[in-house]
Length: 100
Image 1 (cartoon, rainbow, N blue to C red):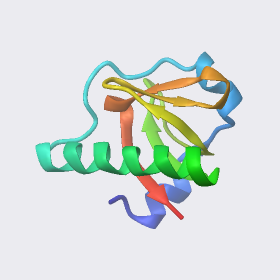
Image 2: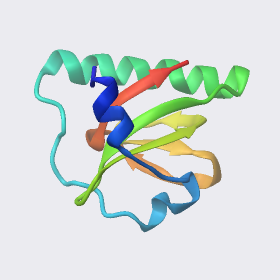
Image 3: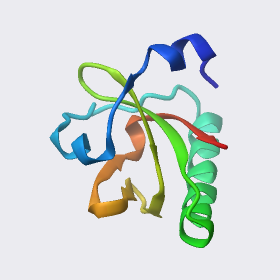
Image 4: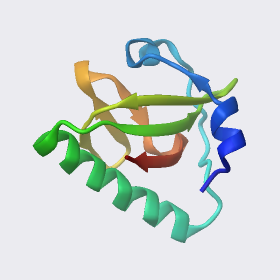
């Protein structure tokens, strides 16, 4: 999990602008355990989004920045998450999922 200081320095972005971003091509996490934990958190976030309309905070990397978005996750596929309006974020770019 990233420290609060890094979270505070991540650039907040509106989900409507996600389609304009250039995502990293490589995996942002270093261990298989972290990758597995991220996938499980995304599955929980998807359930919470569809059943309870709960938002989560997602930290993700683009070519230029560490970004954060607070949003509802509607679907998790093998390679992407789908947000409201059909916007997608590649899973390999997601550094952290915070459920609150």
